[in-house]
Amino acid sequence: MSDDETIFEKIIAREIPARIVYETDAVLAFLDANPLAPGHTLVVPKEAYERVGEMPDDVASEVFAAVHELTPKVEDAANADAVTVGINDGEAAGQEVPHVHVHLVPRFEGDGGGPIHAVAGDRPDLSDEELDAIADEISDAEA
Ligand code: AMP
Image 1: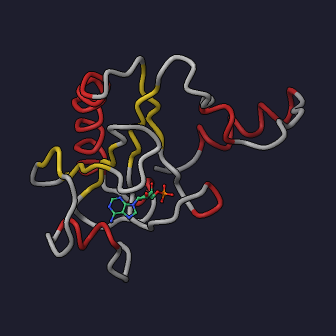
Image 2: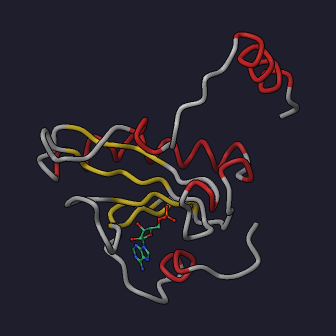
C-alpha cells in the first residue's frame, strides 16, 4: 500500500468534495475534476494501492465489477457513442495520482481523440524470437 495519503484517499474519507456516482464497501467512483469528456469517471479501490499488480485478487475483482457496471451507465448518461476504459499504471505511463484508478472516458463519433493504440511512441519491430521470449517471460512468471 502507499505510505502517503493521496487526493483520492481524502475523497474516500470525505475530507474533500467529489461528485460520487457509485460506492460499495471496497470501491468508490466519482467524476474526474478535469474531465476529458462529460461524464469522465474514475473508479478507485478504497484501500490505497499504487499499482494494479499490488491489489489483492478480491480488490481487483471488485474494481473490475464496478467498471463493468458503470461503463454502460456512464456512456448512457453522457449520450456517448463509446467509452475508453484505461489505467495509467505507473509514472512512466502517465500516472499522476499514486492510487490505482480506472478512467472511464465517454467517447463520441468524431471527437478528435484516438484509440488506446495512440498512447505509445514508436512501435518496436520485434522478431519472432523476441516475441516468443517475451511471451514466455509473461506466461512463466510467478503470480
Ligand atoms: P492519472 O494521470 O491517471 O493519475 O489521472 C489522475 C486524474 O485524477 C486526472 O484525470 C485528474 O483530473 C484527476 N483528479 C485529480 N484531482 C482530482 C480531484 N480532486 N477530484 C477528481 N479528480 C481528480
